[in-house]
Image 1 (cartoon, rainbow, N blue to C red):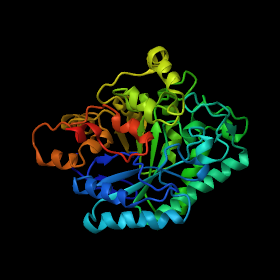
Image 2: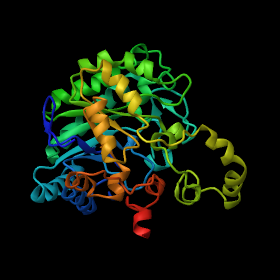
Image 3: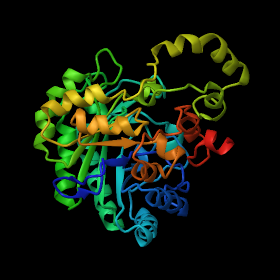
Length: 395
């Protein structure tokens, strides 16, 4: 786990990556604040040598519902991100900072973006419940240009690499999944065309290494599943990106992306999809609807994306990273040395313990994260609070 990982355009100092984790630390315009530098400095000092930012919107239309999401869509964001990167590099020059770029597509709110909600197709998300206008063919090409512009801005800011978010039901995933892609143009005929155009455009525009994040399945009966994802892999290999991170799910059933506890009361209090309802309606949901709704949740288990990642690794020429339910040193060793996965990415353990990598490196014995997957950090991302571990703070 502490050997370098040589990729096409870079070498990672080790094989433990801080996965993209939503920070909620920008200002209302999406410009990053000094809080990002504080967070990343703490992670880098704790041993994280490759840090992927939370998702940054590529346009105002594609921003998330959370109030303080960062962006990389225009030149105003470059200076803010440059200050963050310079701060980290001044104390931890070996740390690599990758930016995750994303367009939400149908997974946002019109009252937040103040623009019509656009997606690959017309299928409404049952979580966001917004009417969706399919992007026209010309608008899809404009989205490609937005990703390319975001990549250029990221390079200008000084990032070491880019991760293109193709997972969790966001726009590129919407094109890849038959559930959301019901188009009758070339982007419906070839569900990977949008992804191909984005990656080719980004690689032509910048010299940075490029990662992808892909869901191996998405819970929908007519959606993306493992056999379909594997059938896509010859095309994904042909794009010659540096690595692909394997995840799961879409926001249709958000808890299936992360697994673990379901702290309902904080959701009803802080999530802007729920807290606008009258308290009586929230009480009815909690006591009469929720027990039915949670039947679609998948129970937590350690390494819950590993089997999908291993099957993809068997057919992939591209290095594979896996995320999800990784909590122990022995698990990381097993993933890399016995299952042949190239590296791991972790999110919640780093929220709980920013020095987790140092703890792994300093001990020859088993090391276990203090993260219990209580998911308070996750649901509170929908509040106005920056990301932090609520259980650890309470202790």
